Length: 134
Image: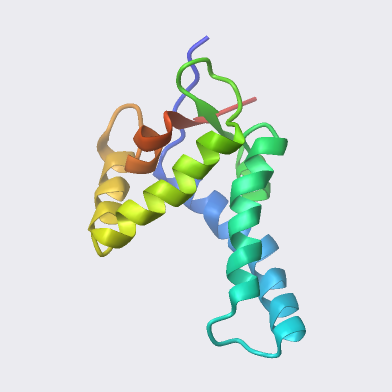
């Protein structure tokens, strides 16, 4: 069964919800624990672990994605991503976006908006897609 690709707005809303529901409490908690809001390593670590591990253990979803009815899946078998897939998606793609000074991220944005399959650079690197689910 071919799944319907998730478009820009559903992906955007999922990210916004993750930021509000998870990111804000993590920001407050990490500031309390470290006593600093500048260069907060704990916040970066917790955010990274959330975006890396939750999709692995929760069928390709983060909290925001679950609310929006979208998930990450492997293109090859439409199964949920594993830890290796998510490392490629987050670390390697993050490296690519960093060495291109954000230009790769902007290109990815256009790819999600204009490509029929709605896949971004990080999706191609990891062999994933973001799709709607019922």
